[in-house]
Length: 215
Image (cartoon, rainbow, N blue to C red):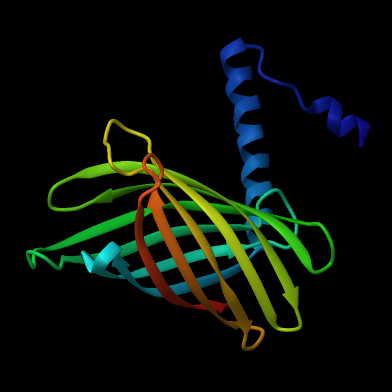
């Protein structure tokens, strides 16, 4: 074995040596990443949401697709891609607008007890409509309490635009239960109240239902 190791030599050229080391590290990283991905459970969710603005000024409906992976261990609990289509109608003028949103969302759970977990969601993405296009992000600390096949969740979402656009500073209170129908099926109900982060003016209430299929 020692004779075999002695025969392995790095190239004498500094440039060749650099590329040899870089290629070796890349192979190790790819192997570790593949093993990490294999340890996760793929899942896909579909969510329907209905939102009504203050005093009935607007009404919107949206459909969201969330393919992702969940891990039992590691520094990320859930990683998801978000694809959303939203249709909004101004009740006063009847004007309609369609918006599309997409991005990456990560979630980390830290169990405080066997039933209670603190959570943190982080999202970065982009929204585009007929009149504007902007990049935004949010942080959502929360708590999850599990018992039997039921989970109760509450979160406080802080949404901000991360470019020069304005009018997208919103805070949301989000809560609702989810139910494990089987090892592979879960359904979640959620109520959300949103308000303007600067003026504290009430903006909207929304209700949603999400079905998740786990593979």
